[in-house]
Amino acid sequence: MRMLTAIVDARVFDGERVIDAPTVVIDGAGIEAVGGPVPPGATIVDAAGGTLMPGLIDSHTHTSLDNLGLALRFGVTTELEMMGHWTPAERQAINERDNVADVRSAGMAITPPGGHPSEYGPPDEGTSRGHMPRGRDGDDDLPGDFAIPFCSTPEETVKMIERQVAEGYDYIKIMIEDGTVLGCPGLPMISNEVLTTAVKEAHRHGKLAIAHITTADGARRAVAAGVDGLGHVFIDGPHTPELIAAIAGSGAFVIPTLTVVASAMGHAGAGFAADDRVRGKLGREWLEALAGSMNVYPQGNLDNAFGAVVALHAAGVDILAGTDVSEPRPGFGGMAHGASLHHELQLLVTAGLTPVQALRAATSTPAHRFGLTDRGRITRGARADLLLVDGDPATTISDSLSIRAVWRRGVHQAPVA
Image 1 (cartoon, rainbow, N blue to C red):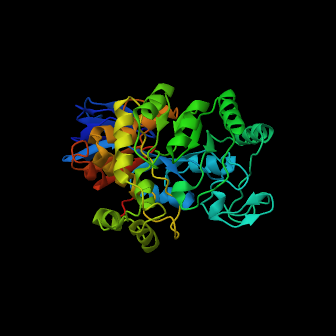
Image 2 (tube, rainbow, N blue to C red; image 1 turned 60 degrees about the vertical axis):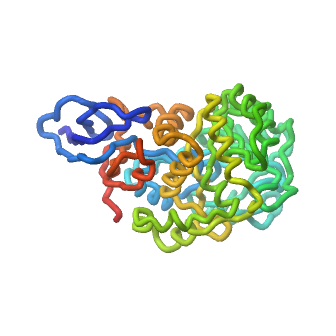
Image 3 (cartoon, rainbow, N blue to C red; image 1 turned 120 degrees about the vertical axis):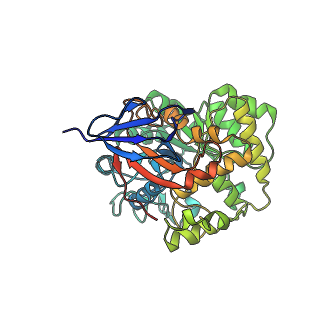
């Protein structure tokens, strides 16, 4: 028996633009029709005064099962994890659940011995233990919360990427980080030989290569090596026309993560956390974390980051919305799963993007760049990952937080006040 739902009289942002579609019909897990009449027997959702959008995609997280549930409260229906550990069975189990956001993951990143992010945890022989979220607890090969395998040679890099591919990870993450803007300068840096090997091996296996960078020099190295995307915007100084042109010419996308950039520069999220639309969906621990900041690079200039984002966008570089949110612990302040993607949208608009351009950065653009062909758009045949909000975020971006309803594969989520 078909279970049809007709969402009527909403303003519809389809992932690219606002369209004239008085009715969007959900049939099971997918979108059956956009526009047209209400089918007989359909359950009608009156969306008058609201805007219907694709479920949001956070293009840079570090997550866990609980965090995926938190993300879904805020209409984030997919998280793209940039470092973490899940078994194939765990990933499949998440794909079969409709009360948490979907997840794609890079697995462990390519990093040199002692390299980022091993500074976040005490060293152990041959590995580094840290405290970023992981998919599960307990693994004979991953002592502590997780263990970071190091790559110091091309041969080790080839083997590690083969393991990542065999375990079903979706793309390859490469760390290019000297610690300058993280409050720990002097971190070991990946060699050019390992970097180029990692990119070539990722591409040989049909995987995207995404580089963690925070400095202009790191961005230059990443682009020269042929990466497909930059996991942050460089923040150690203003952009130059030459660097913008190099990134644009490479075809790489950029995930600016302005939320974590602002946090690193000491801009606390207290004002954002005070919004009742945020407070009502977060517990005390997450609210306290969101209200704080990392403050590891207070000498940084947030306007430089904003200027780089606008220049990159103007040069034709795809901008993807991501937060780098992980877990609520000291040192990781200023972010919370789900909520912070809405903050990222606000910061993108503050930087100079239009609300529609910011919304694309959290819907159709990441779906396109990561090959997620079943989401990020409101179109016939797409997954019914949907977000209904009051107001018009295509005009006033903060309206994205006025959440009225969320669907994940057509399943309506119980509202959290």
